[in-house]
Amino acid sequence: MLTHIATFAYHLTTYNLYVAIAMKSNLVVVMPDLVVKDNRLIQASYVLGVAEQRMMLLAIVGARETGLGIDSTTLLTVRAEDYARHFGVTRQAAYMALQDAVETLFNRRATVDVYDSRKDRMRLMTVRWVTAMDYNESEASVTLRFGHEVVPLVTRLEEQFTSYELQQIAGLTSSYAIRLYEMLMMWKVAGKTPVFEIQQFRIQLGLDTNVYQRIEAFKRRVLDLAVSQINEHTDIVASYEK
Image (tube, rainbow, N blue to C red; front, top):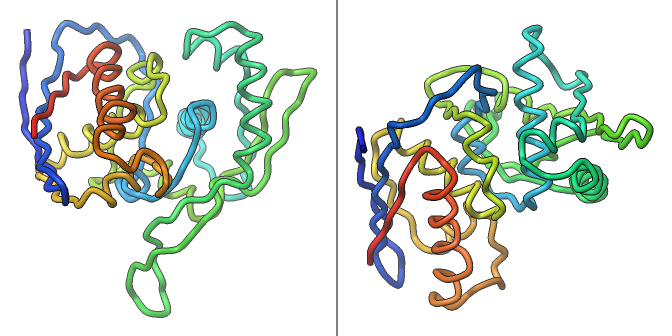
């Protein structure tokens, strides 16, 4: 049974894409781990692998669960056992995922709107996700510190924020599916139809400029895969047509 349907549209340079979203109603949620992100972060330009995204989401949940608030000096811990439990992988796979993510995440950047007090306006700036991180092999955990600009984008609760339960993306193994799910949830709450040209859409999905440039490859390897995983594993049903 579907209880809510909203339709959204892209206007791409090569074709129009209409995305319909329906909420599934037969879900029972007990004490969800809530992921909260500023819409600016969801719309930001960045590339993260699946393990990196998962580790960041666990850190975001951990930051909110402290109940004490965090700042750019706060150290957060992501444990392999939590990674394995949330994402349905073995402990060994979780260990390896965290080790690999530590090797790459420190150098990852995002391009996001940041307030410039001198000019009293927002401006696009490139920021680091984290400013410090370390893998503790004996404890099978990662300790990290969010960047100064990132902290307010993942800790506050305001109207421009999108939230969802961590369990909803646990079954998504495509980084594009995770990004698309967050974008769809943002649009559902906002109730507005975005108009993007294809290059901007690719950027928001985290695609490099030289990857899947042909529309057929983009649909098959990115869009269709993401929609299929979202429909199978999350609380929404998405569909699109040209």
